[in-house]
Length: 136
Image: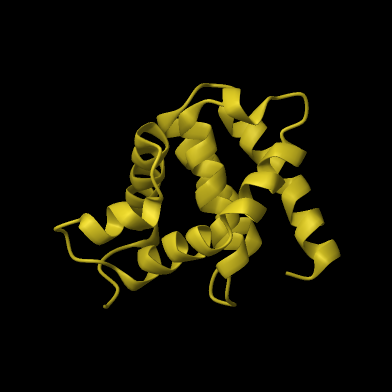
């Protein structure tokens, strides 16, 4: 595996995979494994991190999506949150928290509703505080 493109393009591909997985009710990692496209190591890592931490990621979304029933979240927003939180769990020093949040907000602006960016930003800000408290 090698790096096959910009992180932005990889995040768009990850968003697509997370969205498709939610619609089909399957694990996103299984979709990557069935893909005929070359697999990028960063994309592989984000999807694997989600698969290994699915319960934690979804609990963080549920807890921090205040006054929203997680089962009723917009599927695109949920996919963006799953991807961004997985990236936060995976994060190494070459990607800052600010970049992860900024990219998630940009994806929400491009692919979701006009209010999604603010919602995503709020949830991710709260998730970051939770993750800092448990030192993940």
